[in-house]
Length: 215
Image 1 (cartoon, rainbow, N blue to C red):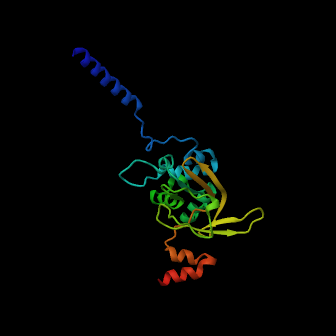
Image 2: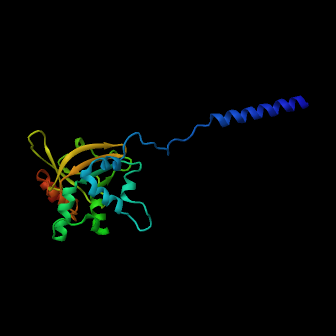
Image 3: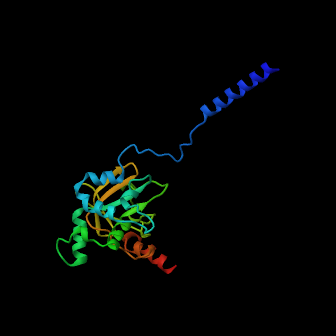
């Protein structure tokens, strides 16, 4: 009887060891970057230094110390329309009616507006590459809950892309492990237009925009 009990105990111990060694780790919540993040891409190019400074300044809530730069370093699918230094300088000068306005003096509210209007968080969907653009309105809003319009003009080598009719895309599809960056030559307008009004600004969708307004 003692021998049988000993064998039974040994079997139970071996069973527990086998189960514990064969457990599969749930990797659904684990994520390892295999390349550069959006922030890494921005940090590599001096032309984005003003935009990076603003990203490091902006906090989306008073309840958190996390910055916009930290957000763009995390897992996700972010489309970033990054204004270059000239675009930001021009915008700050026009707002403050001066020349050479100090980027370090930008107000928290203005910095927040620039950032929120320049980023689309696609969540579980893919970020927007230029090959996804069609003439009209992007089907996802930016962090300020505003729609961005896309337009095309014929160029010497390829089509020129404009956002909100004014911001020209200078460089396209700078891919990161958590999104994509497009360089623009003008800070995106902080449009208060609704979807119908934005669609009416797109030449080939004006009638559709008028119908949306009526409904």
